[in-house]
Image (cartoon, rainbow, N blue to C red):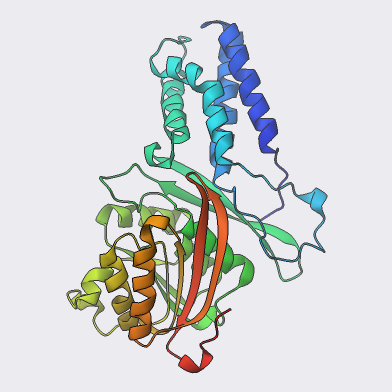
Length: 350
């Protein structure tokens, strides 16, 4: 883990605009046109790869002892992706349609890269398979700024399943875990993650030294990808199938009577069924603590309110709740972070 200096987003956008214009004016053949296009694809890849880090700042951590010149925070706003698409889409479409060919052994690769880049710039939902590295900054015990690099493979969608992409609540939770050390005595804890998706949160728990970490989801192909990401990060995390709705209904006999020191999850309230059954599953699976991060979508307030009321009815109290805002592809999104406990005496809202 080392400090990194990278270009600002406006610098990359300028390069994308300049290279796109040069590629358009240089024609469809020749070494000059080929070099412009290859450079354009490289810069677009950099922008897409680093767009994952747009809210990976040090947040509320005290910056007083950090030398700012050692690190330039790279911020990619969703509008940067829109502009990059505007500048480069005509070139990318010509590569995809094979209107531009150079007759070398990289023509197929250029076409594939152009297709993937254009899909990604059309939104995460349209993006194809991609492996990207998330850069999560933090201060070590000596107050020195470092970064944890977390490579994650994200396959294409299958139907309406959302576990194949790394959504905003998971990086927010990962960042909080790493920067604020929110879980005390993690090294002595057996941790269960529900709805792991691409595995980011569980991988961070493992990096932080959890005594044992189980990452779970309900979809078999999501679990296959999580297993791949566990190997990619050389993690000790154990991958298992767990459908929290089945657990709540008493239909998952393999999880019956199992208790975990810590249960953790992010972004699991898409339907009222989730709001009703997630608290029941959590109450069955947790010993004393549940950590949870969700986006506060205007269309899902009823689910959030039902979830909170259901948790309380089961004797699970809010120890801490904290709201924050971040820029997402759809605009400014609010997030809510919870800590739940069985201990009503320590029920103090912060």
